[in-house]
Image (cartoon, rainbow, N blue to C red; front, side, top):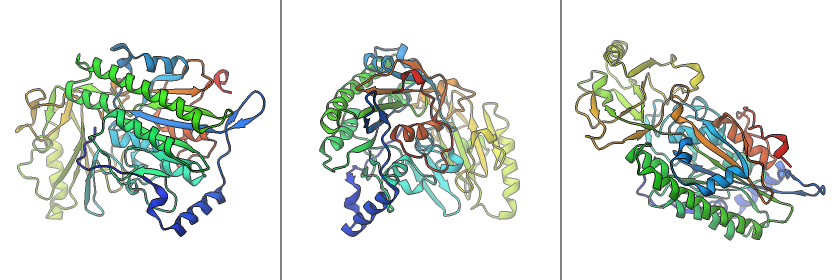
Length: 445
């Protein structure tokens, strides 16, 4: 879930540079070479692939059973799909989206929450737009670096791109006032209006309605049915626009891949937890607590006297231990399989709440009723191995020749970056070492 009061401007990447710099970027792209096409047809003719990657934020797999979803059903029937897309830890919007785009965990990409603090430079961000804060190469840099023209609209931390290699189109800031129809419409508008001799081949977009409603009402609320159906209708209009634009912009030997993914699922929330109260703190002077969903980071680098920091940590650990719904980890003690700890952006202590609990400053005591305090009534962030409600979906659909509706089985978010690279015929980023999703040979060209 993201909110913003700032308007966004979708910008041609070249417009940010003087002409000489733009020419330099073009020369760099020509040095690395254009990506080889991956579409191989029965007559031996090669074509180009276009990948359109759309994230449906917070779309839980069981939502298919809760409402009519004719478009998504069609895409699954004509594509390849999974209802077992596992997110990284924590399964929050920013860590999850950045992990999908980079192919690495929080420990590598450096976005541990929707809000996070860097103890080395003393800076804290809340829903940051800045691509430069991502510490591993995202797909919107991997593709342009290898000559694939790219447009990215509102994908988490894709904004305000800098450097010699950048997307051809990107935003200045997330605009929370846009509807999903408008947001996906921008993806189509960019593609339709692009006049470069080399076509755009990677386009990325984002839709948020199911996530926003899941937080507001709870994922099991009856209100979700209408939102799920509305999202399906929006995707339907988008797919029709994709097909029309593809026919206008591309050649007969080219092919279109639509990849739909989810960053996380959603669980019902019954209790809000005040982190400071849970830690037994009457004052937070010198102690910085940064929370996102059910995960919190506690920093003591500003606590004085420094000689009392260890004792203060012990006092907080003891206080938290009185609450069976919470776990506390010292730095270096979180499970290695989480891939969570970052040198400067995860805290001296990591707080993790059980399913049904989320952090909030609203309760005066340690715990408050979520409904009485105005929600949220749904949350994510929980470890998917402990809470399977964090699973999401992925659908890969091809046009004009469909796939065969194969169930891909369990898929991990870290496989998405290398999968998109494979479809585009380019190499993944150096740190994105996971295998791409195995698409059964019987449904590949």
